[in-house]
View 1 (cartoon, rainbow, N blue to C red):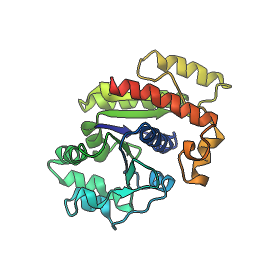
View 2: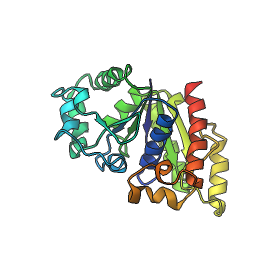
View 3: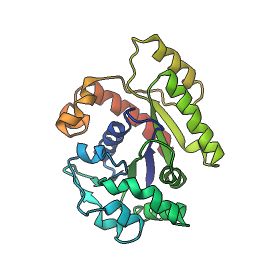
View 4: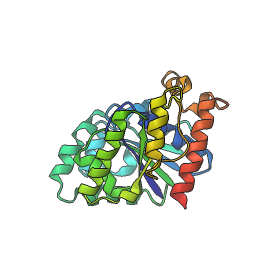
Length: 247
C-alpha cells in the first residue's frame, strides 16, 4: 500500500481536486483506493457525494472510541472508498496533542489499511499543525500542488525548511504545478526556476474550466468529461506520479 498526502501550506491551490482525480485514475487502473478527507471543509467528500455515516467520526476514531471500518464508506465508483470529513476534524490537533503516542497512532491507523487498499490519498488541511506533522511522519509521499506564483516559491521553501527543522524525510516531498497559465511570463519563469530543484513533476495542470466544473457535477473530471483536455492533463500527470512512487 502506498499512502499519499495531498498538502500545501496555502489553500486554494487545487489540492482537493487533485486528490479526487488521482484517486479516480488509480481506481481506473484497477487499484483499490481509499480517500481520507481530513479537511474540515469536506470538499473531497462533496465531490464524491458522500456524507459521514457517524456523527463526530473523526474525533472518535482518533480517540479510540470507534473502529476504522465504522467510518469507511463506499462511493458510487468501483474500487473507491472514502472516509468522509466532518466538522470535528477541526479538533484533531487538540486530540493529537493530548496523545503522547500521536505519531505512532496515525501510523498505526494507516497500517490497518494495508491489507485492503493499494493507495490511500489523504486530503490534508492547509497550514502547519500537529495533525499535518504526524501525517508527514506516517505517509509514504507528501504531494504538494503549487501555483507558479512568487508567493508559491516562498511557500515551497518554507515547507522544505519545515521538513528539515522537524527532521522529516525530504525525499517524501514531491511537487507538481497547478492552475498554470502559460500566457503569463511569470508562470514560465517560476516553473523554470523550480524545475531546477528536481522536486517537481514535468507534467502540470493548466487553469481549465472543466476542473472548476467538478463542483457542479460532484464528480472527478474523467467521470463527466473523459475526452477533455483537463482529463488528459490529469491522466498524464498521474502516469508520471505513478512511475515516481512505484519505482
